[in-house]
Image 1 (spheres, rainbow, N blue to C red):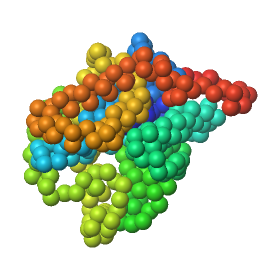
Image 2 (tube, rainbow, N blue to C red):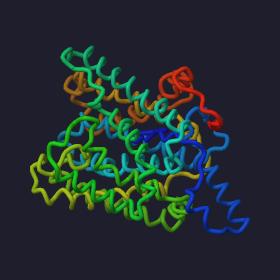
Image 3 (cartoon, rainbow, N blue to C red):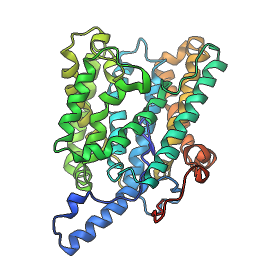
Amino acid sequence: MFHAPQGNQRAPLPSAREAPQAREEPQAPEARTEARAAARTVDRPARTGETGEKGAGRDPWFDNAKYLAIVLVAVAHAWEPVMEGSRATRALYMLVYTFHMPAFILISGYFSRSFTAKPHQMKRLVTGIAVPYLVFEVAYTLFRRWAGDPAQVFSLTDPFYLTWFLIALFVWRLSAPLWRTLRHPLPVALVIAALASLTPDISDDLDLQRILQFLPFFVLGLILKPEHFRLVRRRAVRLAALPLAAGALVFAYWVAPRVRMGWFYRATSAPELGYAWWTGPLMTLGLFACALLLTVAFLAWVPGRRTWFSVLGAGTICGYLLHGFLVKSLDYFEVVPAHPWLKEPAGLVGVTLAAAAAVTLMCTPPVRRVLRCVTEPKMEWAFRKEPGELRKG
């Protein structure tokens, strides 16, 4: 949702390599050449410190996917204060929430495949994820206190609003080497998510409930390969995505008044939502399947060529972290109660366009350059130079 993500958002990585087991099988020279080319093309977009402003050496498809995903994240967040009373808007909100963060998390997992906790990778983990989390956690708390809630406490372990994704990505990436050692990582991750969904009172520290319930999408990204994304981009898949999306929208409109949105946030358990414990695992599997299908449909229609917004894919972390201030302003300053026309059709369209335009501006290279000291700090002073360490990115 991000160089991160998803909402939404980035996936900083060193240059890609295939897992050791993949190198054990003999390959023809042309196959090895194709694999190396695919790895260079696919994994470079997530490298921290890469400007990305010219787009050289980047796969525009992933940049386009990240930008479009962050637009969906921002738009869905902007709908929250204005969708009350509109079944159609609630249905759209539910549809987008089914897959926008799963898509971002899946891509983040894919770009974490070569994470092995080497010194230079740990450095990037700190500078590219931990530091932005700490800075924006404090920034959002200060903003809340300034906007009228001086009692808002500072907490570095209880993520505020959208900063949960950064701390989740930090934890997921640290666990990446473990998942690659398992024979069946995805079923194990699904079992963990299902158990979390039926376990009430999981601590709010680090937003652990979300970390566990969204875990399968990150693990799925870890086990995906370039050929899987090539399959998604086939014409047959694009054509099949159209009736799938239409059917999903109709179904969302039907269930909109009947389903609680808490299921889609993955922040609470089934008992806490007022349902029997056994509904947690069922909803975990059902939502995983729905999210996966809609993610495929979304990715199938992402343009593969370089577009005007491809350059914005490198700045999605900025769009993700900044758009929350605008969305929260609608709530803190009671903009919607003061302007009830925003809940009318014309107002909803206006809010949608404004959110899309705002997050687009926040992803632009000038904004990214300004925020680089926070989102991509070098911090050479904080780390020892390892002998023989390869300099990447």
